[in-house]
Image (tube, rainbow, N blue to C red; front, side):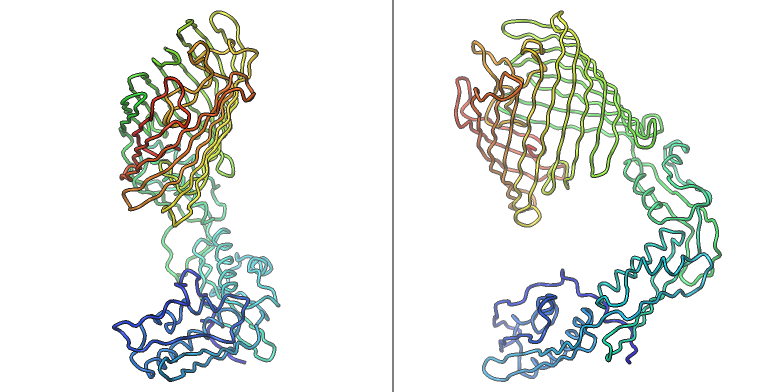
Length: 601
């Protein structure tokens, strides 16, 4: 029976592996090259790959050695390391030797005799100080998940200790920590008896919440973000979640949520402890701006002003002015988080819009009020009531429309960057029933839309990324004329089908784009990053718009292809895209050129 501290339970991380069979080279550091190998390792645990990534005999192989004696010293130094790897995998009686064969091209052979694979004999949990408030032993044993008969590998043992610490920290012992481990290996039975000792610290319940610092937020609003009840057992995750929730508002430069300091070994009594929330206010106001250009619409500029804490309860007001030669928009939205309850956000918005376009001219005003909330899986759902008034003019008619809509949307965003996604996906679903007056006549119709995008890193994190998107929309109405022209569907442009003019993809009547009730778009991009600052893309976009609410395949699918450059600025990628229509129609340009901030999708 051997008694030892279970250093063998340390695991060798696979991220340490740098490769095994590297090309052997002569270098200035050594005149003698050599070969190396390992025999006798169990083949089902990947230990050969782990060992080759850790042992100096392999990691320094390309540097050679100055003499055979130096090679022997290097190999001898790796014997204990290979034994540690075997013990970490449950082979506690393993023996290892290293043999060096001399000659013009020496070789090293590590011979391993793993012995029996050890199993857990018993797993005991102990504490430095016994407390009557500690959980029952049966609960801790179930948490450890280390019954007799499971393999006694180091990774499983360390994970079981982490589970116990987490359980304690979530059930009134926020200062709990692992203390020590002692293991007895029985070579006769090939079992390992483990005693894991923990420091529980005091049993703590929630006391007063003390708020310190200039937060800029009304105190009752901050206290409304607290999810625990007074005198409930402290859970470390609840403290962390409050800190993350406050930091996520963007209203604070620094946030900390802490219990009183507790030194290991300090004899502190059980009971309630205060929670101190310390925060410093960040700047609530900000301005933003961007410029863009494309050959179809000309130059454009966008300017915004934002106040993240308008009335002291994290109200977020955003205003934006968007100006281009063919469209001018002024919009504002006010969001009220945690209203009427913690899960919900109320938003109110308004927009004024003036458009001069080949498809139609428009002067419009919209207002809406709605609510949104987050769901599991990263989904955000919202519902609103929207009212609009618009005056539109085409080459053949002028209409005035008064509409009320009930937009319902669901979005899921699982990407790593809002402006330059290289991994993940986005999904959206929306539907809006409308009613109102169109040119003095009652009208009823509905719109539905679904789509998303997907980003796949092919080489490295962002050296080569494949990005694809798709969108399908339909307007359900009795007739095309029931729908105001500014609610119909068009495609084409820098964020649609590149290579075609803005809103130029549409059914045509007497040479004029009429808009349609069915739209399908898709796009595929290969994004290649050459340096940290520059890259280029190639892409193909396709889209079709049809008059009926469902596809009847009467319209041609319009395809645009092209490429572009990307400059990765501190505020996001700036794109320069050049696109060509594969099948030019009458009126189409030979190419379209786009400059804007952010990727195309």
